Image (cartoon, rainbow, N blue to C red; front, side, top):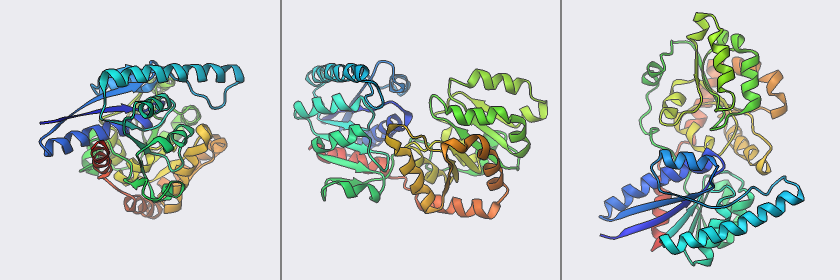
Length: 369
């Protein structure tokens, strides 16, 4: 029995980290079927969300120096370049210690030094481009990669023929056999409309503010599963405590959600969120229509994701500047229009692809050979 050693790296947001975990699970299954084994190490920053999530996923973790470069002043950029150079040395030392057979990168600025070190150490590289439009890190690393896995056919246009593989977005566990009645019972929802509002690991400030400023009005229209992120959880908890008991029962507030997330998506009739990479796979997998408010940071890549889902008919795109004055009316209007929700749900399901993690795992095994 042989053991495949895989170095994983990516970070900055859950959309760059959860796909690595999903692919790791698929790799375990693929190697088990071949009668072989696989072991992993995750390389990330000391203070990024990946450091917390990797520990939760029970993956051995190595710290790499890295800093974001985009949108900073000259002095900060110089510090970032210095940190990246240090990160390359960190990653080279890790390559020598761990000696991975293949390196799998999912994006975020920590991938840059790890990717450069892998190339210098002559280790095969597989990239996952979860967003429709790659970030600057993945653009820079693409020439060094042996294979690039992309979520949608639209992303293959920028690469030489044969370099990109259309695999879909790798899903975390729990999306295989979703049952809406069971999911609604899990969250103790009644037969009325239910809305999922999520802001990823740290939260979406402007969306949370809109909920907080009109909380009783929201709850008079819909039951609410709200994943606020850690920054706004205490403020929203106090608001919930001051609600009348009837409205309190309609508001389910969480700072963060992992294993229950597929159930939350299945339980709800509509989602409100940003448009990070995960919406490309998870909303279609759950057949969940969405109002997407992409942020303009990181090169505006969320706009491409949101537009793809909107073009397919599964989502409505709301400009970030109009969240305060339009989100409530837009959302409650959609929840009241059952025919449109049904059409949006069907459009999302048409994009569903639940085998992406396995497809990527098979690419990684092939490249490692």
